[in-house]
Length: 234
Length: 234
DNA sequence: TTCATAGGGAATTTCGAAAGTTCTTTCGAA
DNA sequence: TTCGAAAGAACTTTCGAAATTCCCTATGAA
Image (cartoon, rainbow over the protein chains, first blue to last red):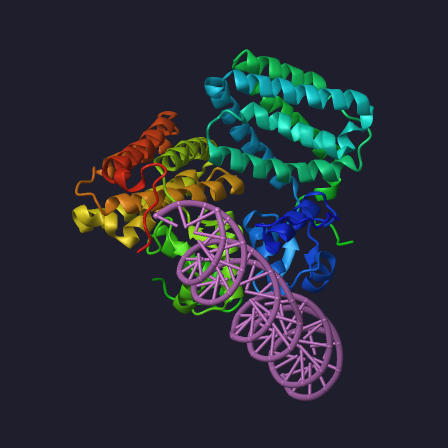
């Protein structure tokens, strides 16, 4: 469970929001699990109203589902949702990268190189277990962010980020039942090279990268989120 | 101001959310306006906590901005935001229409025809003032929704809807200072014909339609939301 | 047995007072 | 006069009890 660290100028509700989101995305709170106020109140040490505000925000992000006057449930998972997420991510990542390659300057290029280097070094150090490492996950997300970082569209970056988070939730579920990982570093390097060359090929590479990941997630974890099925609460 | 009508199974917070959203989108609450709890409590007749929940949700939708421990403000407007909205709407509407033309069946086609007919009849009856009519605005939104309605992506439809709402807010602001409207029915008819023909030309037509609207909004109302400027509260 | 209904218990939703934070004004020293 | 600190006002945020709603079970009639 995530720790409570709140600086000045931040609200308690905002703090709980972040912690709840982390716990849902990392499946400490499982998909479909009922979110009881009493339980959450003990866990996060805040009042009903504060909790309610955080849950309402997460509902707007589709990370929890509000059920009228019957409380909240952690968002369920399904293969069709994952496929929809994948298609929309492809659309946004392609356009974000296309625009970044058009507008990106030297600074953009150097940030990509730096992000790749950090991720690659850590991966080499960790070996096969890289997928479970929280820091590597952050480096990986940041590498992909830098690729689209020069697209000059706050709205695209925001939507893309939310979809990335939701997709990562599926990767996380699937990884528990996984024993093999493909060498992502080769793909990442190819994407980086094409992007820095401003080659249109980069768009197809990023699409392939995303779709291949989804294929693997379904292959290893698909049984956990077959359509219409919801995981039981712990 | 919107009326309070709450059925069973809906929460009071959800009701206030809808009414607040309407009032922000229709600029009864102006861009940049400070949202004081005391004022809103009187206006919507609910408690602090309930208001807070609604505001938190609107913050997640970018319709209000949360300022740490200094309350909430109705989302500001700017030309760069409008242009960003326009670009993203183009991306989503194009892809939604492309997929609808691929997947759409007879039912899809007939819904487009029906939606166009309703909108067109009302426009003819209203004459030049159609733009201010709440019912025409609903018909117009519904016509555009039917065009992408067969895309089979709940996520695309959801994102598209939110962007459509935010863009409509700009149209609304601009329309107060506008005396001329182009005959949209010609454009709509051309888009419909191309879509029903499954012609790729439809994608360029919808893009032109969106961008032309934005150009007009900026021409007539651009002075109201020049960048970095925020309208004073009433 | 099956269905409908009423009652009891559990959970959610709402409320307004109390605590906490920011903004404004006042006052005194440089 | 100008600047800075301190006191006061205004507003936001948090809290937990009270009201409301829902769900499950027991009861009785068809």
